[in-house]
Length: 115
Length: 114
Image (cartoon, rainbow over all chains, first blue to last red; front, side):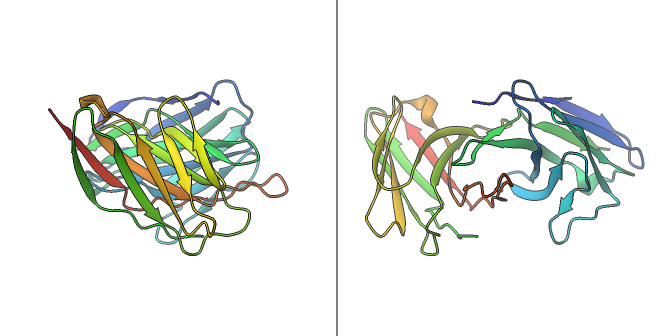
């Protein structure tokens, strides 16, 4: 299956700063990638669908100006958390979908802590 | 999108067989059923996928009745390292090259005791 890598795995930043998280599909050209957020003891919540060469599609309630998504190539999607605040602290996970049955392959996740 | 319902938690002992059932009453004709495992601070990992009847791989079996409104993940002889959250997902069919969005349910926290 597809191999997905995220970077960084952990990041700590001050409130008000912006943080970029990269998601790379290492062996599969992904026209679509998904970004999820997961709070402690909770399930994964889909934030947005990242489309190569076009604008991302955001889920209801997710601020597109705060969570900037760029999918400039078939192997890289980035999520930028702008003007981060402590409530943005969470585990962010990306995934790609492959095959006719649409199996999902996930990155290792990125733990964001905003002080 | 089909909504899934699973038990919030389950406990088991090492060496036992564990069965986790997921309800998905609104499953669509083209939808597959996929189960994922997630350890703390890691991305989910694919376990098994099926469309109907029974599927078996080296780590699990998946039982799907004829009406496909539920499915059961079976883990044979669990060990302590199987303690994790297990998610059932429905609705992964790719149509016309476009991806289907997926929504995770609450998942089942499986705790394997010594």
